[in-house]
Image (cartoon, rainbow, N blue to C red; front, side):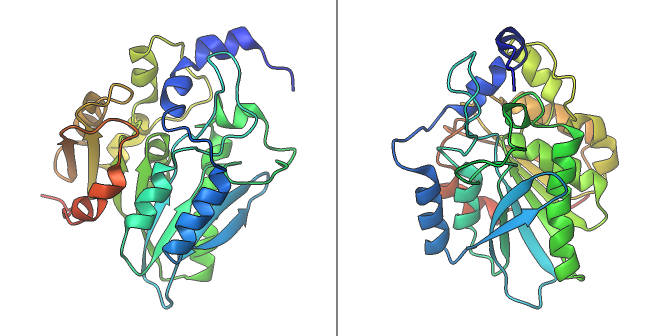
Length: 279
């Protein structure tokens, strides 16, 4: 695949800001597997029409409610002009949240091509985790993963949790499906165009954005957490989304001292205790 470096630089500088925090020298796959195993989360792959989605799950049948965690955008850029060869996150906050969840039924979904391989399959090209990371095809693949769970457990209803760009995916899935009963986001990029403008980058033409489906979510219980020190996806993003959905079922909460890639998992059991509801 030929990469137009000028195009990527103009369009997706925001990705570099979002995705490079928390890098480590250890193997991110090994680190993630160790964390998942410690929390009794078993590996699973969801094979969709065009791409594979990695997951880890802890499910005790029969299951009627399942909390699903969707990872952030991952390690998409090596530099401002060079996409990475592998989007596997170095700081998988979404997985850390899932591991901190004491519930009996938990599913974690990585984004397409994260934690897959090596080698990556042919479908895993840099556009999948850069300018097309919120494309219709990517959202459809994530939706297909949920539908495979639904086929296995027909009575299940989903509580969706999304971190960073995974928050955008979670909201888009909630608007698409009829079996989502709650939505939570952590540092969620719920207004893609606004965040891009905030960081002075040009629009992403293939991106679907949660803010555009916000009216369809006005009756869904939801809460959106932002870090007070988050300059990547600042609290104003969640505020704009609440304004778009209306306040009846949408809560926002700003966490003092927290930044975008901070230790959200340490606070997560407490934050999960906050009820979501309408009215």
